[in-house]
Amino acid sequence: MRDIAKIIRRTHAKNASIEVEIVRVPQAGQAHRVFWRFTRPPDPRVIQVESPDGMCPFILGSSQGDARLVGTYIPEVVEIICSLLKP
Image (cartoon, rainbow, N blue to C red; front, side):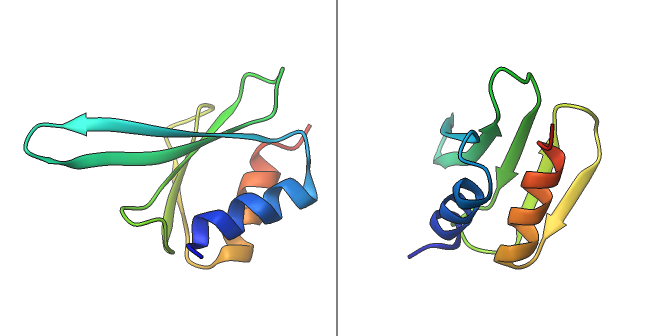
């Protein structure tokens, strides 16, 4: 099981209202760029989680600013997502 699947499962266990969308962006002559968007509707905040293969480390960004965070292991990524989407 890839790390992203574990992150999604653990995130839902901490907050069942968090939703996840997989986004695939085609790139000419290359594999699709894939990232995951975490939201907590109706809250407009979006957390974007990126990794080329769905395994740690992940780069996390928020719709609330330009700062990028790096999550190097699963519990850390889950904690970042949940704290950024905290009500």
